[in-house]
Length: 476
Image (cartoon, rainbow, N blue to C red; front, top):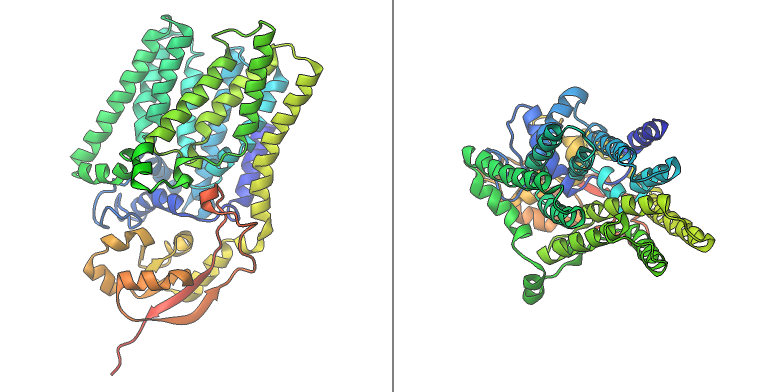
């Protein structure tokens, strides 16, 4: 329990510093925040809907749960991010208990190593430290894993169906993961579990239909399909043919995965040469699963770094299971320790270096002070993503950058202030129209990133560089 408590405390203490407030976090927080502030389940952070429409930019489960969470703990950067810490702790507990009950990871030492790997993996840190919804997906998958340990058949079936049903409501990216997992488990375990996985596949299909009906009832199904179309219809080959293959969202930058994958391959060769490798062993499953899920996501055209947990976490479980039960040579034990350490160090060191390099500039209080000194509750503001938590409770209305194409004419005219990065002044003012003048109020960071780390390389390390502009008074 000390491990989980230390995890929660550390992340709560650093929530206002790392990572930066970024686009995906704000987009999935805004519907919950608007509902909390009495403006309905709506958003002004998406390019596909206006401010008066029921939000259908993505799947609703995380935003709905976040609304309940905000009601308990209030609205702030730390409060919003803390729900992911709780998702993560719950997922870790389920994985830990499942490995014990299944006798999959057989020693306490190996189970502790597994928890450290999961907490310190690069893509894992990327996911749980920011306000995206991926940790909810981790929790659901961990619940499916734990469901295998339930003794009563009807409880096991009910759990699998329920979790599979809500999976598409938590993230459509879970569907290929569930499908690949079901097929792989059927191949590995034979006919015995076929009924269980038929239930899982049926639940996922029913959940997808239910999600579509939910949005249809609210009259926004076409909006939902339009919002997800760019990330569900352009596959690898189409992107290559059209010449717009952007690696940042199509290939994950999980630096912790590769040492674990290399170790899995080394263990595979070692055991195969000694005749100790079983076709249905956890190691074989983990290797095939990580390869198949990766292939499915890459060829679908969508495999960003925040999906990296889908292959990293299962492979870590399978590698730790193998290390706990198979006798290894002294040389391979040392090599295994180096690989496990490299995975942990890469995740912690890279994120840590990026955060510490400009630690004072990352204090979100810098943004809060600028906003509080610059705007009032009568302002209608267009703000940079970074301003979201600072401005949402202060201004009359807040509009985010991607909403610009959807902004209604009356919303354009009513804008009174811009708090944006100076480099975006020209495109923003071109989109909103009117004449704007700087007020002189700014926040300029002392440092600009660490060694060129950028979002397209898997880092959430941009800078809070903001300036305030107000609409020019008409000349008399």
